[in-house]
Length: 145
Image (cartoon, rainbow, N blue to C red; front, top):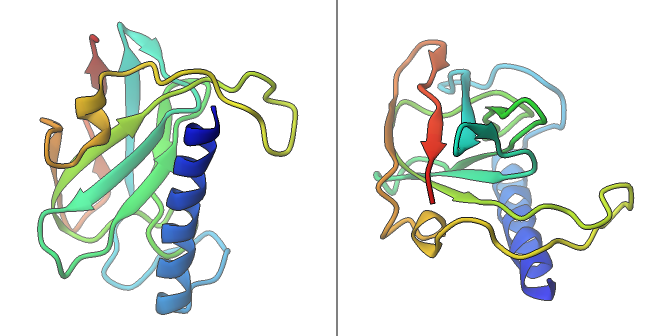
């Protein structure tokens, strides 16, 4: 559980560093050169609520984007501003999923990782997507562990 909290803290720190370097605000909106991206994460056909999705650019010049999956399995990516999307290009997608033990707490504890390790490693994940310079609606990621 502590490892999971540490992983989430690392992801939050990375996103925070991106925001500081990009002078982003927390407002929802369009960022220059970034296009809306929405999708779904399903596991065995069921929504993977609370899963963390990270889009890792294949091109080192692009920024990573991330999202948390909602109760319906849907997510919207954030790069600089909340739900702004991602830059056009190719991304490897990583997904980590652990359900909160006590979701009502401000910083809940999490159960064990529910997906195979390959989905958390951008060098091993076989989930690759192309983001285009338009509104992107991705095919669902339907994982069968």
